[in-house]
Image (cartoon, rainbow, N blue to C red; front, side, top):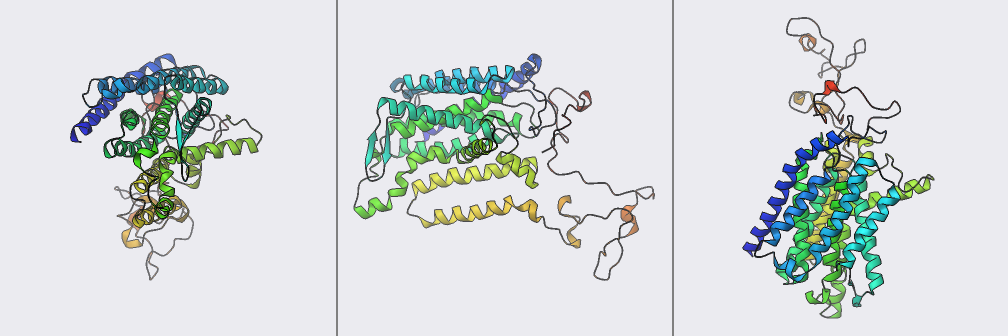
Length: 460
């Protein structure tokens, strides 16, 4: 088992390296052709930033497939299955549509049609859902039309879910990286743990997807120097959907013997039976929830479901008071909890510890989520060792000074004195979460840009 792990690791490293090295030239190319849209009212960044990061990610995808085709333990995937070719065909089409949208802002309905065509191209080449595992019934075979419609629906939902969540620096790439890592553990266990060769393509897809996101993240973390754009978000959404379709619709659950045993055992195993079917949905649970809420919110307000707004989950985190980086980390935390929790429960469904750990981490996540509402203040003796946001703020000049000690002593005079002995006014703290502070711009120094924000736009 060690040799396949090394092959997967090599594929991951090559994909990540090619994506990372291509992102710099792609950034310069995007700036040269003007793929830098003006700041919109719903944007959270303050300066024009180039898009087209999906070009580098597509290059990483091609490099990963080429390397895997020449590795002894992975080349059988290309010989025994047409799914890699189907993935590459659909990815090339959706990537081309995304590049055109990043440059020319094509209509949302045209993009939706392109997504459906890309999914249909993969279906025509064999990447489709053939059957579904139903507890108590067994394997239910689908007709050609049923499999096609279900496949297209899953591809479109996954693509748009990832596209909707791409609103903060590093958010979409990081969440898909976490999801693909959890998915890899599940598919690798199916292939080498249960010797199910039908899970081999999905395992390869998830490794390549991890490399694409890992190579792009250093350029996309806050403050981002380049955005993946629709060319990147739709691409990684399609690759994630392809892996889900491959392992869910083409791996026969009867080969894992999950329906065998007594009636009590079957009842106990009822929920884990759903894991192969629901795992692809749990790994995108956060983006999918954001997608559903956005559609309901916009329809309720009389808007088009494709109309952009500032009501996404990451926007809500910023409104609560979280900083940009902390909002992204909170989204990472919940994605990892749901994805790895589902994988852990599928492996040890009889263990109560899995449930207790998930519940405990969920409670921790809620505490982190509500931290801006209950920001603690450190005691006086810890003022110099805690971050500034936890220190007691000084009153403005003319206001009554609160006592600093139990006897009500005034703050020492030298706290307001400079090195030359002159009194200095206390500096106003910088609000947490201000994007662009100490950050690089898209082209060069900040002084070369004027404030291009719209008058009616609000920060965060």
